Image (tube, rainbow, N blue to C red):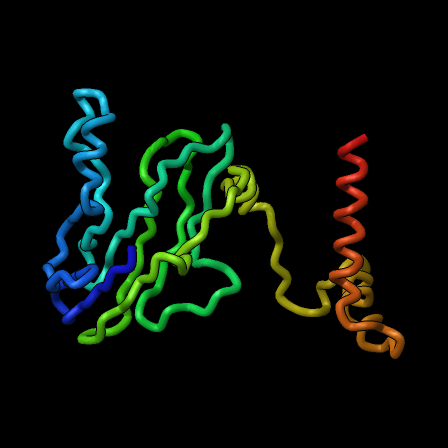
Length: 199
């Protein structure tokens, strides 16, 4: 459903349909709590995930996607703003990694209201965030600590200069170079990988 959020600098309010503004602490999607309790085991009743909740920091709100998630072993989910869409001027998403291979539960996004005194409309047909599967090794300490930093150009070796020639010098000095050639090469490589995987 469409809903609206309003932050006065101290308190967050929310409203939907033609309902009046209501202070937001924690609220369920209309009718969902009852539906949840009808299907949940006895010891889980009363623990339906909230639809919206005001965060402890000023202007922060948690929004439930309506989904519960679980990923394959050693895979996590990167929760981020929806790609390739203009950002809302009134609502800014935080990014975070959810280790959903070890944890099963509701998929929330935390967002910050960026303006006061002006309602922010959240439309049901417009995505406000996305999730991207990420293998855990990509952000593990072991992976992230494997890098080197050089302090000057004099420390670059032949391998780095050869890569620079391919990436920059060759591309900019070739008058026959077509725009988008890198994307074409990447698609060809992906097609070759798919063909090899299907063999």
